Length: 288
Length: 302
Image 1 (tube, chains in turn red, purple):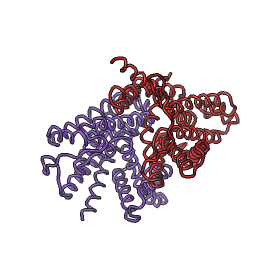
Image 2 (cartoon, chains in turn green, purple):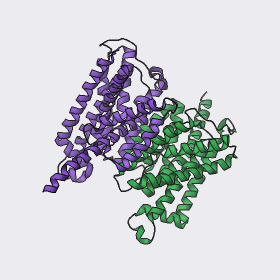
Image 3 (tube, helix red, strand yellow):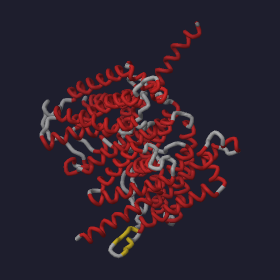
Image 4 (cartoon, one colour):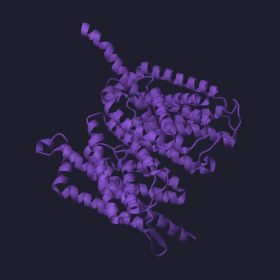
């Protein structure tokens, strides 16, 4: 009896680990944007939704090969990220910080409603099912394993880009000191545009992996948007390593909490944990 | 004849709720968590009535007490540990999601995502009135009460103190403002009023659903309604409520039901434009414009 229990618990823990990878990927782009531009894109999950619709329509309606559709979706969301920065964020960059949060909230409303208008409220499914992978008595979804691997690869790629390339160094420099870098010949406006496109691209990448696991509908952003912000805040907004660790902590709460009680209680425990941590370490678990 | 009456009730009810939110918003406490208070109000009253036969009059008091408790539990540590700006918005966002998820998770009692209706018992004991006129009077009374509170807060020392706090917290503390207490007081007032709004909403509609009274969507609706109208003037939130409702109804009359969510799409674009170009909101910007016109000739004479 207790053997079976342990196997299921182990499966919950491992599934939590896989979920953590996905959540970590979700938080990467948002953290990058915050770290560099100092703006929280409340509409980040809605950008991911746009990417999911793009994959769906290109693949199912226009019969593009899946991989090509995914690449196009990443490019499209990167473009959306750039547009968002140029037309929405730039005009409020010097306004009060809370206005920047609110303006992207307006974009959230717009994207969600526009998606309802354009695509209807019915659930859309890509129709691609990856097999389950069996490991002894445990079974995992291949889509989750893939998401986990891509999340790690994406994080590593972003790390290398930021630390090894000239452009990446400029991005990090801007995030550390916005006033001095222009004097060193770095154009902040250009860096902000590139970072926004990069953040959008990461949202697109997350969309490609989510579309393999979940049905698409206009309100899907609301179901994983809040948790993405909370992960970023828990890890310390802008702190990518912190966000990564926080994603795995959150995922364990959800998976194991959901295992013992009900999925919603897993989320409730994770959110209450978040609120508690905020009181003890308001700038995130890895704040100095 | 019922339709305009229904619209008037909704405008006043949401106007009251947005006014409650703006008590905090206007002093820099941008809460994304007011859905929690509305949800606590709507659901505690209905659950107590449905499962224990407790009259909404008593249930309402329980709901208000519960809201006050939650507001203190979240507010005190937030203000004590100086959680402000983005962080305050996101902590309160977590609170509103917790409320929504708890309601859904307790689906055996609350009906989960399908929502719930109160057991029918028309009359004053269960606060269920068929007549829209009665509701208009009730809601108008709350709305006027809300405006009165808004004005009382506006004229109080506490508001000036909070204004100072929102601009420079350390400086305000250094001149002897008890920051935590000042913030907590306005949070408590705002939470209690929002909770009452949730109770009214549930009793008027006789149907509640976790997504329409709690969670991120409704919390953002309050934030944006208040901002669209203008949260720095007394009637701003009410103008915001009227504007959003008339926009939705107008577009629906114009286009019929062919384009669902057309109103929200237009509204979303307008919100973005408002926040960028008209951060004072519709009424705030209009009053500023009128004020400038009135001032200009006087200035010329001087």
